[in-house]
Image 1 (cartoon, rainbow, N blue to C red):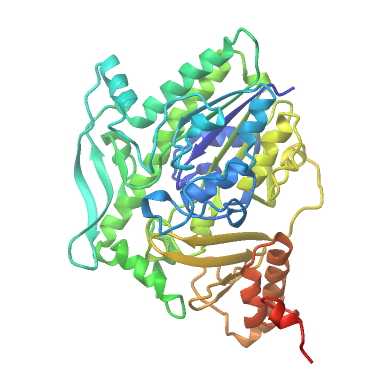
Image 2 (spheres, rainbow, N blue to C red):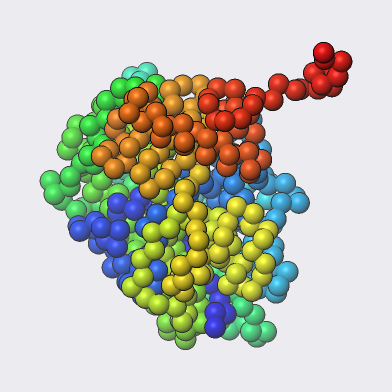
Length: 492
């Protein structure tokens, strides 16, 4: 029986950093152990590779076009900044069922409404990066007589205008115990102890949302220097030329100043990124050890995922952005359910909204309100239900509006960019998505099939992006020119 849920979420976390996902050099023993004792999903995807919309999809079980929280507020260009008051959330459903809710860490799910608005206990920690000036963190440092935040050795490139580029990494002059990640784990453990001692015996959902390994990678020496950069291989897609690609990708590469960094620096950034993952892995271990110590392991589900991935040099890019490559759309997803099998690997296409439905299912609640999700419990139980053969994702912009839709199969990926070049990749012979074959006559049938299927799925969802596709592509549907009554009346 599952009484409780521990939900672990990282930010901007590529599967390339994890041993359980095939990295032979990475040091992630805690998450590797979680995979060994539970289920690892090899083809988990985010519905959109940007923080706030992805986190809103997890909270609601709805695709971004549906919940309409489409951009991070820090770079907002006119989109909504909070969910509608009537929008369903799993948190409110659990609260109505008398679950106790806790969230320690990154919220980034709105401006007016915080995590507390949805019933979560825990400190309010706004923003996209570690809020090192937050009063509760400063109080934690004082309480434990720990030194304040201080960095050196910043790594940044040169921006297109000639000034300094974005900070990518730096050395942190604090011990591990003073890091924001250690603080988050400590606060989580304290809340876990309070929940375990609840006099009413209420079931609980407790989430820890780490702000990392999102860049900039700011780490103490033991993690900043954990990997020798000389032992790091650059990602194969660093060979990207941007030929026949949307020009915005080259512009984003310049924005992140990739070409102004030498190869040794790029290797160092990857080494630091992996070190950051190891630091978080260590802190997750502290949380899971506390679950064991409190005697909760046999009745507590543990779920782990990320909001989206990270480039870290792949395709000559950093961060994320208007490019729908697997590096930022594939995410880790691990699940350990009491009584469930271990050592299980599932390759179905799953998404963040499936985790929403899974949380509801574990709680014994209807999964129907998670309209774009499906419970993963049958997969975790080893069943073989009929499952979706494709994954659909969307993007709406960051810094500026930029609409995209993606359909991915086992063998191909189609990306529709209304303002630019469309993309088609044959993942069998080009797994790193370097060659855009959208105009290749040898793939004309594949392109037509994927366009038609993307159109069908968007129309079925109610995503009006399909209307653009109906007039622009051969999708086997008539374009609806009717805009008002003057089009439909009095026409001979």
